[in-house]
Image 1 (cartoon, helix red, strand yellow):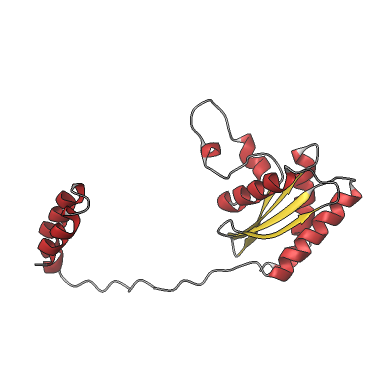
Image 2 (spheres, one colour):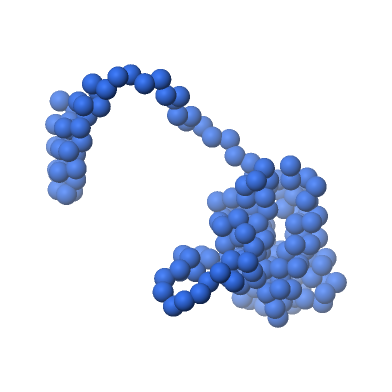
Length: 182
C-alpha cells in the first residue's frame, strides 16, 4: 500500500517520477523481506569544528600587519567551512575589486583544502575544469585553515600586484593562530 501511495503522489505534479516511484514500490517488499542486519543507526546530529571569531580577528589582524609591512593595499576575508563570510577587513587604499577577489580565494581554499596558488598550477587544458565552479578563484592568495586534518575556514587576500604576495600575507595570518588549531 505504501508503494501505491508513493506512485500516486509523484504521478500528479511530475509524471516522470511515477515510473521511479513504481519501481521503488516493487523493490520495497524485497527489502523488507531481507534479514535484519545489525547496522549502526545513522547519526541525526553531526558535530563540526568551527573557527572562533577571536581566531578570525587574530588572522585578519596579523595578515593586515604583514600587508602594511610590505606596503600592500589589500583586503583580507575569512570564511567558514561552508564558505560563508565571517570577516572582511579592507585595508586603507585597497581597490574595489579586492573584497570579491579575497572572498573567492578564501572560498576556494576552504572548499578544496589547498592553497589557491597550488590549485591554480594544476589547471591545464581548454575543457571544463574545477575553475568553472561558481564562486571559485584559482589565483594565489587563498589559504585553508585546517584543524584535525580537515579545513574549517579559509583565508583570502586580494589586492597585491602578485598572487604570491597575497598568499604570503594570508600565510602570515594563518601563522598567528597555527598553534591553536589542534
